[in-house]
Image (tube, rainbow, N blue to C red):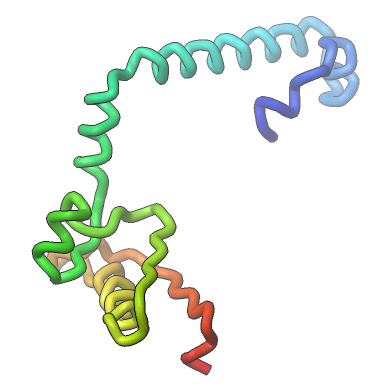
Amino acid sequence: AMVNDLDGYSPEELAIELGTSTQEAKKLIANVRSEVSSCLKQEMTRSGMDKVNEDRAALRLTTFLPDLDTALGGGVRVGQLTEVSGLPGVGKTQMGMQLAVSAAIPKCFGGSAGEAVYIDSEGSFS
């Protein structure tokens, strides 16, 4: 369940929905509001530099192209969708395959031992 799922519920309605007392529902609503407020305050007090430093510390996959890795801040960031576009024949497919392999390199070899999803939107692998 999401926090937004509680929007619009009165303590009485929530108590019925959860099969608990109105007092327990009030406590739950208060706790959720407190946690959300605390989280928002924490997020709002982070500086732009904090966010930049977090981005710099994020795990990245190498493309094995030093200039491109430098331009990307150390490689392609893990946990995000990355779209690659360009003219035919410039190496988009090769780079995608290399990143998929890089994602699976075992940790003992300096990799992330992760997984990748390669989406071939042109159907060229079928």
